[in-house]
Image (cartoon, rainbow, N blue to C red; front, side, top):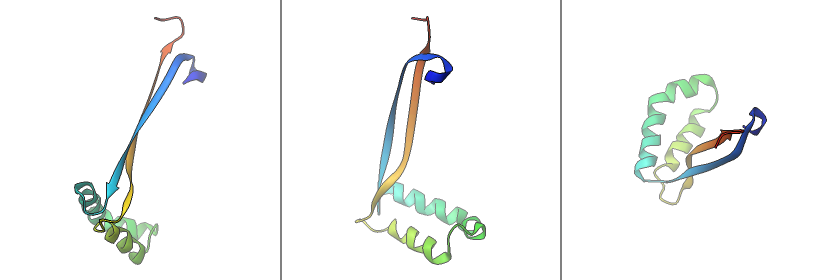
Length: 80
């Protein structure tokens, strides 16, 4: 943004934490179920790896980053 001529550039991020067995973990499980065939057809994961990853979402001892939101802003130079 600075290279585009903005000044007073700032930013912040918010990182959600996922715990196995939580509502957000259930959301990720349901999402994985909906796209399972596409993931497997892509070759990105084997059935075993996908099943192992989804199983972690039931484990209360499992913690991970669930996603992030990042925002940045600035002002045009010469403006108040």
